[in-house]
Structures are given as structure tokens and as C-alpha cells.
Length: 618
View (tube, helix red, strand yellow):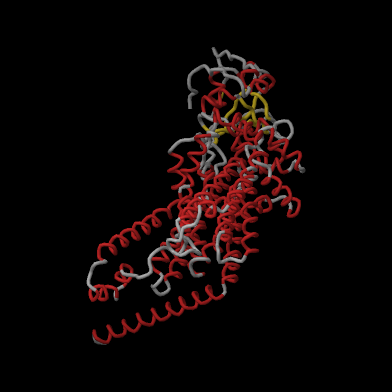
């Protein structure tokens, strides 16, 4: 075959492939745009299947087990009482929802995580509905999947408040955009206003930091008021000014105030939580947490989004510079794709200016959280500001649509790109949780070998709060029943520099947990030989060494380095150690080592004891 024939054959094959891909693109675009409800239903089924798989792989970790133990108290009054005593620095709604989910669906991980799954889904349907008001359905679905490709998705299968207030924040944003839309029916606007108030108040009732969801709406509403006052908003002729009192939509501001007043119901709990956790919190406020919130929550997809924004800015300035070109030159350039971007007649974003400012506020969520936490609370974490992901998903979608809407199948390309990113990411997440699960059970399976070093039935001391509850929950009963969790708050603060989880467990020691939680001095006074499961450098090992108690590390390689991760099951890699209390035989002590007995009063949360001694040998 000649080179000409080969080239012709190659060209025909290329045209055929393009025709097939074009046909698929037409079919997807038509199917999604003409049947939006069915398209979102397919996404919902896909979402539920992914979460079910991930939930089956991921073990419950400390925070989820705290939620579960409080939910098992069984009544709203008992749950309220536990939270009032500082068992969890969160409002009661999440615990109540988990309680009823257990009652309806049984005691298993997916049932505990069902409220989070539903809360995150509320966010998905709200985001999809919001985007559909401004862009075609294919683009709206792509933006929804883009939000799933961020780390906020990891909270959709965690039995905590984050996914719930995340979804409610987007619902509030959607309802606000509807209730201020002059084109919406009056009854729809009233229902949307009620929905906004409910979403904000319910969000605050799941997590106090959900009060931040008020700020993007307040910022957008303030901008809308100014635009109406200046006569540059919907429903007014350009330049038609109105009195300021008429420009203010008092319904919205009263609704925001009513929703925000929900905090008053939890004022005593908030004060107690700040007093209990803030002095030695693991998540003290720092500017680094603002940057971490973007890199850990929006995650790697942040960088393609920033490139997209930069691309849009560059083309905007190029179009401004080339605007004076002659008409023929502009026509010649506009026939090319790049030229069509530069000289597109219809400028602006697909969403109103006041909504664009609200979206920018969502993107600034970590900064707003930093300001509020600095003023009051003293604690901040990237997970507290996860609605930032909605801001980036909305902004990326509307900017991409503004740039590429004239390109054939651009919406489908974005949808496929986001879907591929999501599948790849969650595959990695599933693998990591599977490794974490294997690492945990390696520790459980190695315990019989470690038990040979102490007397039969000896206590198993786990001074790591991340590991203690998980071990008790998943280990066989013969092992779980022997677990002890000791505390020495000054030592914890000295060697780990925070005591938040110990404060959680200590507050519920008498009525929430079956795990024995007691001062180290009280335990050490009556203990003989026992096993310790902890990482090298754990506070208890250092504390025992500082008080001249012998500790011996067993030569057992747990191969459990993967037990950490996004939601860790332990601080570092756990190993096995043997130790002894005051009731142990004298032969167990080391020569010339005279222990200094602990005092129980020195182990308590209000103690300011200074821990003596040098660092323990590894």
C-alpha cells in the first residue's frame, strides 16, 4: 500500500473515531439535558454505591465512636446531659440522628453513617439545583461531580456532623438565591425563605461552626441591597435608584438573625466546651490552618481550578487590549476558537453579581473561619470550613461555562474529566483504608504472642485515645474486656501537647463508656504486670520512665505503619510493651531503680504538675 493510501486510511480512521466520539457526546448531552432528574438519580445511585463500599472498608475511628457511644444513651435528655458535661464539643442533632438510624437500620457502620450520607446528598442536590438555574444541566452535573472530587467527600461516610452541616450550608445558599429571585412565584419565595432559615438553624444544631454559613448569604445580600439601591439590579431599569429603606429586604435579615439566634440555645454548652478544650486543644487557631483548609479540603483539584481562573483572567485582559482592533481583523480572529473567546459579545458570568459575591465568600470560608475563631473559640480545623468546596465547585463551573460554552461537547468533557478524577481519587482512598484496616488487625492478631510475656489475663493498657475505643469496638471480647485507658493530663500535655480526646473520654467515663477510664496513679497503685500498646514516645511510656517505673519493649514487629492516615486509628505505629504497677513482685523491678509513686491528684485535668525526668529510651 502506498504512502498516500496509508495517509488516506489514517485520515478516514481519524474522522470515524471523531464521529463516534461526537455521537457519544451528542447522546450524553441530550440524555442529561433533556432528563435532568434521571441524570441526577443515576448520580445518586452511583454516590450511594461508592459510599457503601468505602464504609465497608473504613473502620470506625475515635470521633465516630464518640458519636456512637453518646447516641446509644437513647434519649434526647440523656444526650443533652452528656454534651453539657463536655463529652463532645458539638450540639445534639447528629447524635440524635445516629440514634434513630441505629434503631431503624441496626448496629453496623453504614447505619451509623447514614445521617452523614443523607446530609452530603442534600448538598449535592442543592448544588445541582443551584447550578441548573444558571448553566445547562450537563454543566451543572459536571460541577456537582467536581465537588465530589474534593476531600469534603471523605466526610460523607463519617458519622460526625461535618457532612450534615456541609449539605445544609449549600441548601441555605440555594434557598436564598430563590427567595430573592424576582422571577420566582411568591409562594415559592416564601417557602425558600423558610428553607433558608431551617437550613441555617439546623446546621448550627449539628456544629457550632455552621454559623459561618450565614456570612456568604449576608455578604451577598448586602451586595444585592447596594445594587438595588443604585438601580443596577434585577427588575429595575439601569440607573433607576430607589430609597435605601426599600432596597433593604428585611425578610432576609430577619431570617438570618432568627437562624443565628439558635446559638443562644447552646450558649452554656459552647462556654463549657471552650473552657474545657481550648487551653490544650490540638487545633488551636493559626494562619497555617487557613492554607491547610484549601490544600486539604479542596485538595489537589485546587490547582487545575486556579489555572482555569488564571486562564480566564488572561483572556479577559487580552480582550480588553484588542478591543480597538478594526472590524475585519476582529472577524478574522473570531473565526478561530481563541478569537471567539476574546471577542465574544456576551460578557459577564451566568450568575447575578450578588450571587457571585456570595460564592466568593464561600471560597473565603477558611479566612472567615479564622477571623471568627480568633475572636471567640480559639479552635479551628480544615474540616470546620468544608463548605469552601462548594465555592470552588460553583466558581469553576460558571467560569468554565463562560469560557468554553461554544465548544461542542465541552460540558460532557468537563463531566467526564471530573468523574474520572473522582473515581481515581476514591480508589486510592479505598486502598488506604483497606491498608489501615489490615494494620489494625495485625495488632490484634499479634496480641497472643505479646501475652506470653506477662501473666495470663493481664490487663491491656492502651493510653492512645485514637486506638483505645477502636480496639474495644473491634477486638474479640476476651481482649476488649481487659482494656484499660489511663490518663495523666499534665503528662499528656507535656509529651503530646494536646489533651482534647482525653477530655472527651474523661467527661463520659462514668456513664457513657464501658472502657475503664481512670487516673494513671489510681491504676498503677493496684496493678501488677500488664501489657501496653502504644507508639514509641507515647506520653505514658515517658511518664512511667520519668517516675522510674520499668518499661520493656517486646521484639514484635507489628507491621502497622499504615494505621495512621486521614482519620488515624493511632498516634504513630503501635508496638507492645510490658510494665508493672506497685502490686507487681519486686523481682520485676530493675536494680537501682526506685519508682516514685504517682499521686492521683496530679493526674487530673485541673492539675498543673510538672513532669520530672529525662526522655525514655527507645
